[in-house]
Image (cartoon, rainbow, N blue to C red; front, top):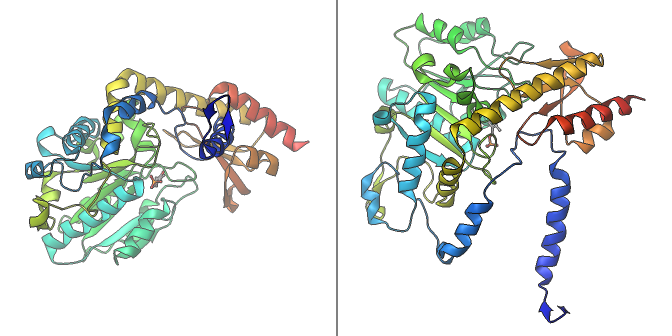
Amino acid sequence: MTLNNTTVDPAEVRLDKFAGDMLSFRANDFGYPMNHKSRLIGFYRWFAGSGLNLMVPNNCGDPFDSSHHHVKINTLDFEREVIELLGPLYGFDKDNIWGITTFSGTDGNNHGIYFGAKYLEKKTGLKPVVYVSESAHYSSMRLADLQNLDLSLIPSNVHGQMITEEFEKAFNPERPALVIYAMGTTFKGGIDDMKAVNAILAKYPDTAVFRHVDGALFGGYMPYTEYRDIVNRNVNHFDSIAVSGHKFFGMDEPAGFFLTTKEVRDSQNRYDISYLNCSMPMINCSRSAITPLKFWWIFQHTSKEEFTEQAAMMLENAKWLKNELEKMGWPVWLEPMSNTVYFKRPAQSVVKKYDLAPDFDERLGGELSHVVVMQHVTKERLKVFLDDVKAGEI
Ligand SMILES: *Cc1c(COP(=O)(O)O)cnc(C)c1O
């Protein structure tokens, strides 16, 4: 197609239309925890001019194993820097941290469960039992199945938290325990009471324990709030944590990071692979070299104060939404420290417009939906949402 001597690529025409459609959905995407205020435009400008698009950098290798320098085309140094930058937010000491950037929160949980199981097996010669609340994100259940581990699914209370008494009943002190703490359950945003569960574990000092935190969403903003101690391993003594990058931190595609200690890394099979010139303790061989650069870019261009402001705004807007729905007499709940407001499901047209996720809980009157208040979910948009909820009722 030729227009005014300019050649128009039909592929771009189609992509432009597609991008326009996507952008029109962006403002009303309330149902899932994506941060639709990605600020990577500067990164793309740099990248397009950098020449890196002419090659395929690949982070196959351990960012903390200096022998990876034999393989040149990677961003492992940036990856290590990102992990070392993130570690202190979660109470990891700089000299006792190991981690990687991941493909997603699920990838991080996969590493938490795999590393945890291997750590416990090495210590005790036994395979652990995985304990996780039934309200936790399904990835932990899928991954325990994938890794052929015994799973003990613990009932949760009406707030979406693991019931501590049920955990104690299910606990088998004869087997090592791999406990997964849900740091924000998917639908209700409940947070497992780590202190209470840890108190039970303390009654069995002879049982080997590994604690993994699934902090895919809440683990992102928590360090920037007054609740930061919850994700501080010096306070809650967890061994690893997985966080998504595309939720709070504003990565523009699925990504995340996994943090643990050197001790845990050292208890893994290192798979010293001669042809890679590197130890390969992590699950994947090829890994994204762009993800660490994007994370690094985000941290170079977003100050701690800005993240703190974003987190405060999300939590404030969540509280505000809850209050406004309450004023309307609409059944609504918001768990402490949570940005996820859940409520009686509104009319189908509203569910559709805002892409709201459905759930069902008889204890709360049946059909529910939630709004995950992320950076792009502003008060102005929530006002329109509230009007829509109201209008849907007529
Ligand atoms: C989103 C989420 C996951 C899954 O993370 P992905 O990055 O989508 O793979 C796991 N656990 C929790 C608590 C989540 O919120």
